[in-house]
Length: 123
Image (cartoon, rainbow, N blue to C red):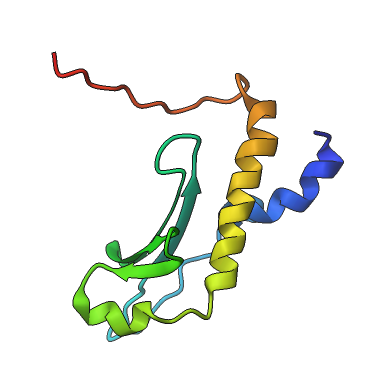
């Protein structure tokens, strides 16, 4: 794959890789900075695709792709889990991730490090 073909994929890079790091904003003493993580992954192994959403490192939901629905970690999040407004974006992420594994993965095989787990036989 030539550099010209990879340019449209640059948006996938984390923002901090593409531009210099912005200074951390200074918050008044009564405000706190929070982080929402929406993490999609796919792999050749099992599970083949996954999505997790967390707030300040506490998992809120995971996505059950077989049912196309969020599953709340706590019952208090059940109403929020029913929100389906971003379902098309989640399915796009899944399809794009799988496309990358199928189309780009073989081209990078043996060229980049791969983390592989080791099965435990119990013996």
